[in-house]
Length: 267
Image (cartoon, rainbow, N blue to C red; front, side):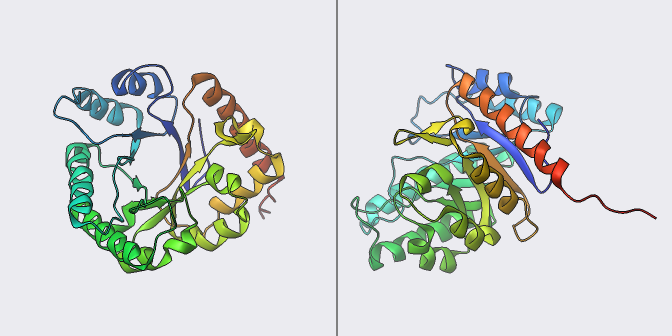
């Protein structure tokens, strides 16, 4: 699957019904990047024997990795014990996966409740993001995803910490946000784009569920020169049939965009 510069195209580590190892084996050579998803913090018995083979496959297939940090933590909690626990959980995964040299670490910005973050929680989030940036050595590799609220709400923490963003198209559509306006606005800081369709109020459907004109405009914006280097487009899907369908849709759209692009005149 070939994507035009400046972004790589990837998908999640759960495309077939198996653990990380078999999924990486299956996807190697079929995609450019794999998003390693950690829905929960690592436990003492978490199986990580697949790491060595993942490193081998990475070299063999020019494969890159992004990492989705645990979703069961609260990086914006004002309770210091919870925030410290969240940071420790992330740092453990970052240290374990360092040999894979992940291009980005995606995280959520959960606070003490399901409500929009208040000023104290934004301050707590900023401190957490700074710590994570120090752990990986580059604050811009930390990418905050728009899960419950827009990146505009999170702006103070993003600016203070130097973190980047992960723009999740499905989440934004479900909240009726101005997708194209937001993506243009945040493009200079958008290192990861989560792309998936929305159907009947649910996301993570094939790209065929997106209006073609919207998909084209999103790809044009994300691929424009104003974006940061090392961008990754992740087809955030969890079923093989949905992923394969989305790959076909994406490749067809990219081919059509290339066909319509003005050709350079040579003399």
